[in-house]
Length: 484
Image: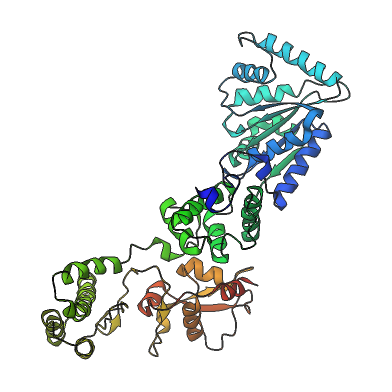
């Protein structure tokens, strides 16, 4: 159903290492060229190291595909607990039957196979995937395989592929002899934001997507790049679920809201240190208020529903604010406020304007049916945890104190965007307005220099001076802030 809805010939974000879907970033191209050169030059050993999910296996399959008929290959990926099992599995992959009982006899059979293939002018390539799991005795057998050689060339080329733990093991004194035989070590690095976008588009094209309009919006691409940490396997998981959700919602374009919903379901926020705070917030209280109003007004005459509904919202929001304040600070609610709220709840004939006026004039908490304002206790704003995912807007406060801020020193390659995301979990026009207020003469997010000190608001002061009524900053300003 998803494939038909988006006019795809096959699943673009599958879980198998299909070389057709391989996207070669700069580091992927470099790693591929290095390993291929090592094989053709007969270096004997190379290593390919990358984090989990970076596509090592796909790169290796593509490499073996490029070698084609010029090489006899074996691909070992299962766990090998003993040297005997390792050799037995290697022979089985080459099509040589053996019971695995006699280690010496297995080595003789392997040597015969090597000589036969070499006499036909073929390279002999053995790929050992997930090599970080090999025990020291098995790695010693792998090292001994490099001794299969003639005075002119190596009979076997071995590619050790694994996670960063493999590099740690090879660097140990115990593995010194094996490390000296590895002449090429290639690495795969996570995608940056541009490579993430190109990777997604590449897989969609291979799967048959031909629409001129991009399937993902710019903000969706940015969120995927950030939360996936640039790791292909994470990108595939996010995009697969985003397409499924988009199809269920009948959306031809995957926007940021869909991606955020997927991220909540997958709980991928810990992958990024600069995860926007909005994605970690609790559910909105608005749906709860809507359900309450539905139940309250279901039994009332139609002409009363609007008036009582507005009064009920005022009461719910005010009560919510007082409850939270009561848990954190001593709150003195004025008698006038209590009378006003009680009157609004009790009187179905109270007009909309009268209810709003009574609540505004008599209490330090101002509430409206669709905007939750910050409560105030002892003359100071109280920081509630945000209950809605929309980005807050700064409310100007001429009495703002520089004590509600902290000093940040600009380091090399720092951007205002990164600083705000790391310290505040968000970057938008409202944050920028507060930074300009705290730093008189501040010109542009682009004009930062190493060693410069700027003040940024504390998370508490930022939340205390915000409301929830304005849309977040667009892509253009955020992109501008990222430029050095």
